[in-house]
Length: 75
Image (tube, rainbow, N blue to C red; front, side):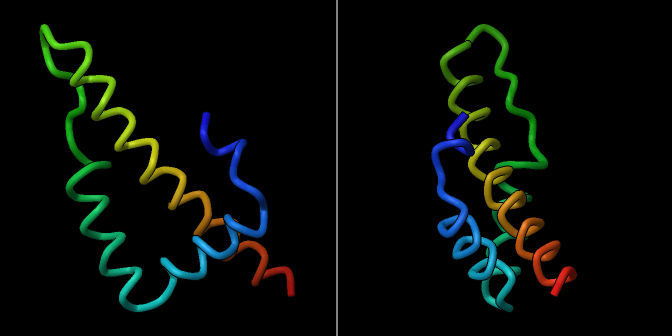
């Protein structure tokens, strides 16, 4: 998964960006469009894989946000 290829410092940058007011708004849009949607496309495994890739990208951002939140709680 792509998540393993992203450095910790880059994850923190991503998380901080999406914790800003504008970032939260964009995260809501990404969640609605790509995460809380159906990725399975009957008879089209390529489209299903593409949509799962979109979902993975949103999950990476969600993971980055969570990492920054946990880091800030520990300070």
